Figure 1 (spheres, rainbow, N blue to C red):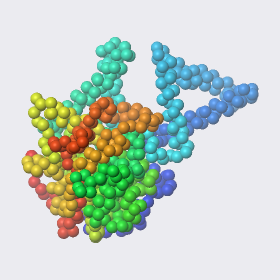
Figure 2 (figure 1 turned 120 degrees about the vertical axis):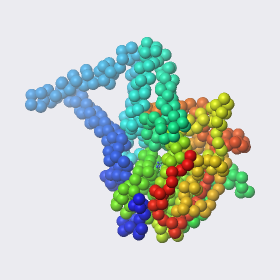
Figure 3 (figure 1 turned 180 degrees about the horizontal axis):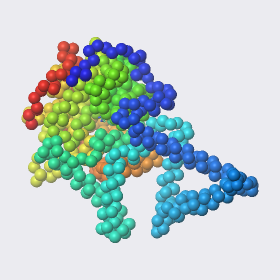
Length: 563
Ligand SMILES: C[S@@+](CC[C@H](N)C(=O)[O-])C[C@H]1O[C@@H](n2cnc3c(N)ncnc32)[C@H](O)[C@@H]1O
């Protein structure tokens, strides 16, 4: 298993990996190049909606021409076929009255309401699609329609259909009661599924039922967050947190978001021993604030990697290339000996960073599965190891990751049990993931440090949980506690979210109706002081590459971990 180790520096393929290609063709090719499938749902959305927009535009243009010709009584026949009057018949009787006015499509009972709903939804949609297609094919804030063509969406369609059927049967197809019951039935079906997904593996680790693609669920949620929050990037608020030096003599909550974010970046830059002009890859790069700062303030050469297409769009829009897909899919390329990928990206970087993303890598269903936990973190370090330039004077790995700091309540007779596990369940419905632990004794799911050695040595560690909590409390647009900006895009994205995200209902319930949402609970609450029983730590860790140990071959020989 030593394909991981590029022993010498590969032949240099110019520095083009640090630039975003200008031509659209290349850009689209790059988009699907390093994702699993060549023809992704993202392309289906783009091509489908583009064709739809152009068909609508051409049809509209022809319709206008036909109307003018007819008004002027100009005949238009092709080989004896009267094009105009036949079109008029078809257009007026069938398309206009039947489809557009809706007589053929909408149920007769509430026709007017259906038509109004149809117009309210589709007129602006078509406008947006026209605008996107005609003005720019790449719109960083685009609604993530492609989610509607993904696996999880199809699973959800089946459950929605089943829920409609159940509600219809229960309430004899009386729409009023049916619609009220629908969310509850929908939630119950998914809840039943989740029992087998999360509770079964408690008793038999590694055994579960799961029809959802967990990584996809994470990405769907992030697409929604991007559109829902104001100033989601570039103004000092990212998908991590900012540095206020909480608990230190320099503590300062008057810092603006911009200043507090700069403080965080300066701090990491220094602790990593990064230097101006160095090369950095950021795994789970979000919308790229860190990379943008490195590039513009420190002249670094930077590149991102992300599973959420909408995030990668933003990053590229900001002039920074972004590999699209999960880091696991890129590790698979390295392990399979993909020459092109290895030649371009392995043994290249001075530093690999992971800001507030490792939390997603082990999924909730594997929280009891020591083998998977251990392998996932080892794999991450393997990938980092293969990407790092073995001759770099920096050779560092950065992790900013929430860790579990205490055990949760185990007595189901206590309210606290339901509160804690309920919050964890909702967290999983949103972000889908679990944390490494930093519980001093007896924990099977050891933290990252144990997984890093011997290839990486810890050179710096600090717990910044209070900074994380305060970032959410101080900034109303921070994702942890955010208030939405209601606009057209938000409404469309919400519509997509409810179709494509099986757990959208519970996510909404949590965000809208709970004074202390699950996020705030788990970072220490919304009171003035952090809760003394806060279940997490936020560990900042800088690891240094050990030049004397540079093979992962030993891993295969390691004994099975003891539970
Ligand atoms: C909480 S956000 C942090 C983003 C960014 N690092 C920041 O600090 O603003 C987590 C990011 O990890 C990405 N992500 C989650 N799972 C991933 C995976 N398996 N591979 C690559 N990226 C992933 C998400 O798309 C998201 O952009």
